[in-house]
Image (tube, rainbow, N blue to C red; front, side, top):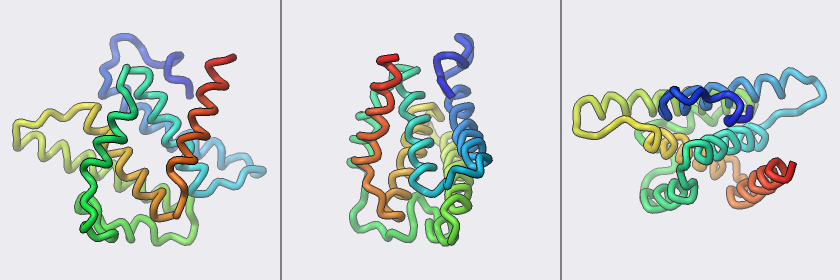
Length: 167
């Protein structure tokens, strides 16, 4: 979905974020409804990162800052089995990548909920920046789990954005 066409001016950035997050699942379901399409992990990631980058552009958030923050927050000694106190193997154990991605979206939502609880107990602000970082972090970990080249995926999304801008 094109963010420019749908976001009302009075909608908060955080509300728009959660709307965009819901669109990820809707866009994947729509693509999967066409029997000619085979939707796997790569296609799901393409849709999710495309929506996330479009959202960032819409609200004026420099996506490269999110990538930099993700890189800075990685703990190389952290077990690959747990990430942000979530067991990724539960999310990724599905034989069907589409079902596995659905579980990933549920895990991301749980991450939002946990972070919101943390914010209520502390001085942290629950905002769109942190939600983007949480979503990006889980998606990039999913790329690693499926052995999908994150950089190549981003290049392809950039190419799509360039094509759209030219039209």
